[in-house]
Image (cartoon, rainbow, N blue to C red; front, side, top):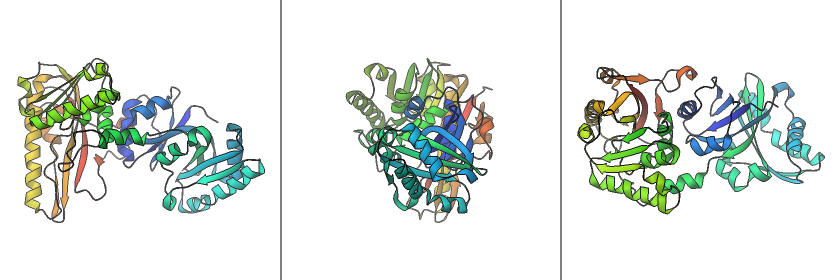
Length: 403
């Protein structure tokens, strides 16, 4: 067993989740990435802190053994379980990431063999599964209390080697759902930024203690809420051109306090007002903003039959809005300020249109940064997109270098 090796299981956007983890633990060597799973060596691992902080990681735990696939057996897994438990009745999960199709097929039989091997050791067991062979969900692990009274085994295969992990922490689905669907001010028709994505964006910004964070398109306040929960920013500022939206942000913030999700002291760090993002240089002090995190305008809801000219018009309007906003934000930013923003792409039955301003922002003092740094192997854009949606989000990280 190597106590310094750990694993993370990412959600639906593993590359984006990996970038988030890199922002939290940038000093680590590049992890082994296998699909939605990552193996890292971290001598200062804190599973509780990571699970409470990360938005894109659904499970994490310890690597308890590693060996050649030729050495894989039910008896070896049963020995590992027996060493870590003294119960006579055990629920267990078993999920495989990576490996060839043949390895995957062979390992489908492993849980049945494991049940027999545990029985030989005097342990009655029940194999807990998900539908259609999917990875055992964090909600199922939490409901069955597998991290406390059972075990959730994660088998990660890379280059013919098996890494056996034991889940120690899972994402609190109820807490995320409460902040998403339980908040009083919602706008389902216009669409809302999911709290998990807002958390990822905030973490990508690497907010430091004592800094000031701005969301110039705060909408219902999702980024403001997540920033108040996860950062030690001295000030969190939200503005929106619509008074109705800024009022919704304030209402949601007060709800967090009422629900005791956020303390009053944390809420006092947050200032919300109505203002046009293109005029914030008139409202904010010069060189007062360290970090900008914002989704911005995503365009009108699409039905799928819009013309190519219509979605190109959407992209053009949003591009102009961002260029004007970034131009007027410059006096308010400290040199080296970090910005994490979202540029949309539109897809209908008639074509595709994208907001892409890499060259344009460079001309006014911004530099596009790769948030994965030396961990990146593809150097492609970070995309957040849900199946069936017609608008995708490109996550863009900028640094203000000045003119």
